[in-house]
Image (cartoon, rainbow, N blue to C red; front, side):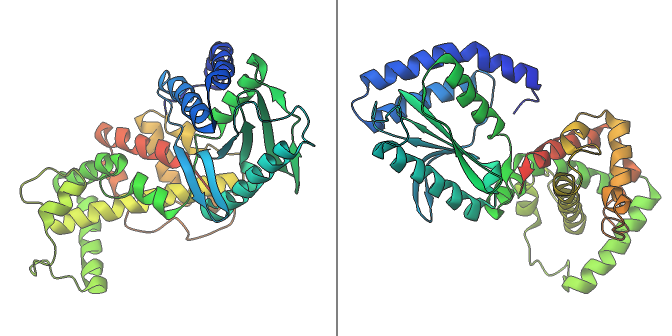
Length: 346
């Protein structure tokens, strides 16, 4: 997602909410059943997101341990009900049933995606009313049914934006977003490989040779064995050379994942330990080259964890070598890695 400011996002919400509210009300009037309503509302949401190149990570009919949620936009659960079936009072049976479903689905997401319920939200929508559901301070907060108006639709759109920009720390998400063939891996690894092969920095070469010896001792890998197809491995990371040096390719891939894990640890550390202090990854991703390099040097020396008294956690390994050969070619893909890591939360 582009790095829009909160003011810009709020402007988007306020400019689009009147028409979207009108269109949802019209959809409820013309829809014959729940499926029709879902199709029309999702088109409206898609158009809203596409206008600003926003990625809302929709999962339709997400299967959970306790049923299937109609739509999950990352951390927002939408429970659609048949058009005009909700009542203006939550004491009504239809409302109570829909609210309970949202609660159950939020509990299912907490278990599957490891999001705390406090970081989730739910909404019931029948085209005539919204019912917003949150969990705070060990209790559920259920709003009274709100007619679909410009004001209530602004709230709905704010939920969509605020709860759709961070991804759960699940193996599936991490492999998809950072594994081989991912966009960020295919940007970072080729640059690291080029540095590992072409840098004239003697320290870089010394570090590689030390890593190479340990790698062979620990893995038992024999580069002459032909166990791996270097060309295919290189292709999966967009390293475009006819005869890749397999060990330098391994070194580059290993360095990429080491950097990713360090940034992920920092992101989680900022969120859980010091959420109101220090510089988060999202801000650091916009640094110019030399400032970003300095930030990474501090990270490699222990950074936040050293300040908290945690020693030898992010310091003293091989994989900060790229800082010795830092240039503009490294800055851009590393900024992208920062930005992608910043979207992860546990």
